[in-house]
Length: 171
Image (cartoon, rainbow, N blue to C red; front, side, top):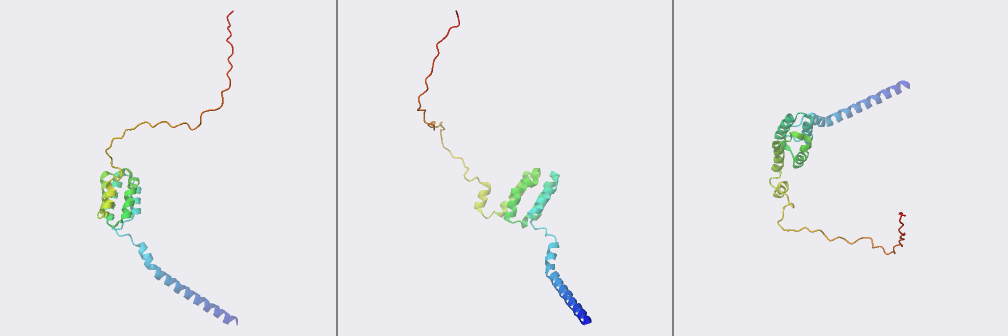
């Protein structure tokens, strides 16, 4: 009886191991394309704002930081979306610091301009100061009239004032 029980346990264990190994192999086969994608490096035309930020914040030397930023923008900006370029434009001063030269600033803003080239309304918002135009008029500034007091004048009678007689100290 014990021998039969031992064989049943052994058979059950073998089936569990076999079932587990099949499940494990299936999981590995299904997940391998995902693992394969994660291990591949990003293509050079991929625009990752985080990589631009890391590049900018990781370089201490100002001239090298400006050079690396310009190289990154020239090689990766083609794959950037409008939102990614807006994030770079908005954060470039804090990420690049003194490396944000007028040339580099023009390059970054030019990328944004390229993305909104077909939309005149957005182009107007980028370079025009709507609502801030000066108007020609003559306005005379005058001092406004004083406001009336908030507290009403005192209506209580004043207490009497006692005046003492003048005393002369000379004899």
